[in-house]
Length: 282
Ligand code: NAD
Image (cartoon, rainbow, N blue to C red; front, side, top):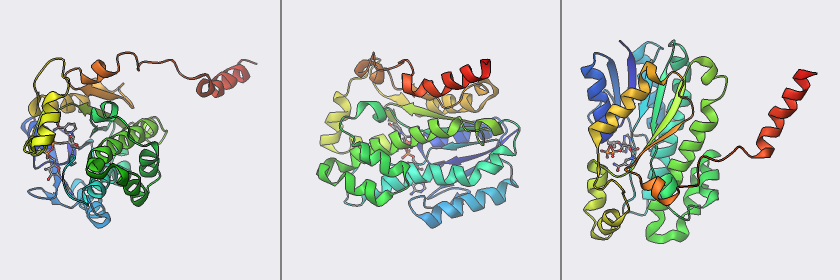
């Protein structure tokens, strides 16, 4: 039986994963701002440090996996874009960097991060928002979405999920992650019926937009089913899964971008490998 850290364990999909892992006999250290084994506010630097420290202490330096589900969606309030950036991006990256050696101490650790299909279905997300987050500059990211006014939190939400997905793809393949036996992947849900979505549906304007959004299979997704996907991505079946962003979104991404992906690798990217190959053959 394994030992897992699950953030966002008090509600929605994080709770579904934690319940399923516990029911299967695993040990789960839940992290959340409320009702959790480790109560920590991931929107602050000190809260993230506490989450890193207290989980490491609880698991005796070895983690078989982690699920990063804590997050918040678009919503009202001037400070919302900043909190979204802090929780959805730094609440993943800072924790995983802090837990990396504990994950490497397990024979085959698996990590699942909750991204979103807003990564590919939200238009006009500025590149500089994503660049600022990947560069560790939350203030710059917040400034970059100000011109969107009331739409700023939706843009930051998508930007935070793009940045975290890119961080996963860049990091997953590195020697200190893939090479250390850690499998790092993301799950990108569409609209799933959880308190996060309920908050959006309680706002008449947002509710209209959510309900009008094209979902080819219709309706909303189920938190328990997304929990099953995460548990599957933590299992041995995912030994060969590395740096993938798995969309479980009722077809919205495919609807908007049928031909956007897969695409051949750009020549510039492959040139280094071809060069090495030619040198090796000589
Ligand atoms: P939820 O609101 O039910 O659960 C989110 C959890 O995160 C809550 O328990 C909350 O307390 C915790 N959290 C929020 N702010 C925190 C903070 N500052 N510190 C610590 N914990 C904090 O939401 P959910 O729908 O289950 O979402 C889970 C993940 O899936 C999120 O990352 C969300 O962005 C993502 N997602 C959700 C949907 C959806 O439609 N529900 C779609 C795509 C992606």
